[in-house]
Amino acid sequence: MSEPQINDMDNIDPSVGGTVFERFFTGQREAREVAPGTFFMTADYVNLAVFETSEGLLMVDSGTKEAAPAVYQEIRKQTEAPLHTVVYTHGHLDHAFGLKPWLEAGEKPRVIAQENMIARFNTYRKTGRMNAHINEVQFGIDAGLVQWPTEMDDFVWPDLTYKDRLTLHVGGERFDVFAAMGETDDASWVWAPERRIVCSGDLWEGMLPNCGNPQKVQRYPEGWADALEAIASVGADLLLPGHGQPVEGADAIRECCSNTAVALRAIVETTLKGLNEGKIHEEIMAEVEIPAALRKHAYLDPLYDRPEFIARNVIRKYGGWWDGWSANVIPAPMAERAKEIARLAGGVEPMIKRAREVNATDPALACHLAEWAALAEPESRDAQQLVIDIFKARADTEISLMGRGIFSHAVRKAEKSLAAMDSEG
Ligand SMILES: [Zn+2]
Image (cartoon, rainbow, N blue to C red; front, top):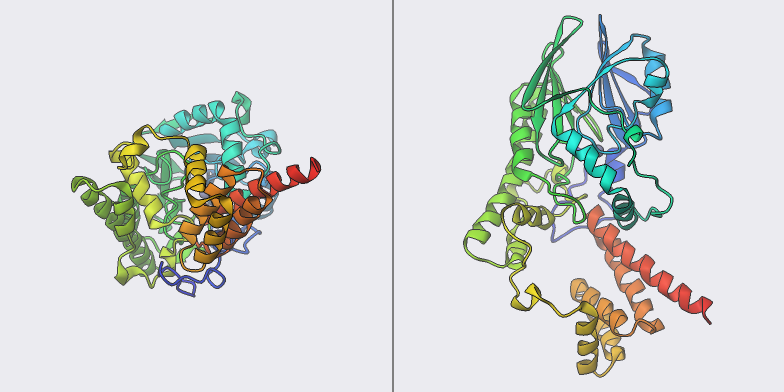
């Protein structure tokens, strides 16, 4: 796997380790024949695979709506065979929204998905604006600019769903489709035994699994580990993932899938142990880690989510939302707390000074001080500037994309507050 090794959480230099999107981009914009009759390509940052059979094409995933016309053209440069079957590996926007150009060209594929995808699509119909807002926080994409799918026609709905496992025969060739719960509850992975090729969808991401996203619905580290162990067990010679580089060689596939499962299980085990011992959430967060023996593997770098984000998903699955601090069950509003802290400190100026002092040694504490200062006195330019400086520094040194997104959002919010003050004179 790619160097350098950066998953030692105590010793991370994000400037050298790459980012999620650097890992996701394979440089493979053209459809390439990676094995006889097997085509693989990356559309923007998401992959798809096409198996040509004597009866037509079996396509695994369809990419984004935006990339769909280019994907269609690329695949059609390689083969004119009819599109026979499509398997969505899950219902995310980057995997299940690229079929329109195929349908417009007159193709009539059967579209296969795990049964939970119907509920996912129906959830999307209710949460378009929420999803736009999440993406604004996560990636800085203006929520007003992105139209999320909410209408029936925005989706190409699956016409065949399955529960646990489905065996397909296309052109006399066997394809096994397996259900999984990992990043989503509607995941599928595809095994082509005669080609010894497995399509993992997002169950393999080439980094610590994105299994703790702070803003999104429940994710499933145990189901993810189950799926990775099942993928490791089939004996594939080539793994074609939903993002990033393929993994080649039976031993490499077995090892990296198994080790990732071990890392996930370790996080789950530590979290459950803490819950069983009655620990409060922050005590558990302080204990979860990637097992030391596995940290050398770049494919476990926490570039997307941190181990403690995954632990929070475990807590959400097994427990409730109360974090263990008694006042937090019915808390005072944050702004009131911030004003009280400022009053005790003798104003926001000492808080600003203290935040800048501690930032080098305790950036997490500095972030609290900055957020409190701006809440206590929102009209203070110095407080807003503090938020910008402290959270920008935090974002620049944060390894996880999800952490970085939220820190950067704080910067943008403070910049907007300053700009509003400027325009009011
Ligand atoms: Zn994806």
